[in-house]
Amino acid sequence: MRTYVGHQQAVSAEDFVELALGTPVELWLGVEGETEVERAARLDAARDILADPEYRSLPDDVARIAAEVIEAHAPELFNVVPLARPGTRRRSSRKGAAA
Image (cartoon, rainbow, N blue to C red):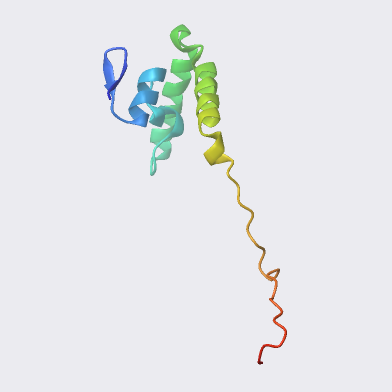
């Protein structure tokens, strides 16, 4: 099954988010190993985008998408299994067992 946002095909989750929001995810999250100059330029571009009237709803859109993802995957996200603490394991007492 193919997924399209407008006339663009989204082939990955990252593509879908980028097409849905209209900006690349890396613009907001950065990339590993970016320099201070690259970071400053990226943040400057992000500020310019947020100042553009076309993108005024972007923070609300991101919050909505994040909430939808959390809701859709809540069972997996909140499937917490308690782990035994070290040193609290019970020893089985077997009566009559040879020592």
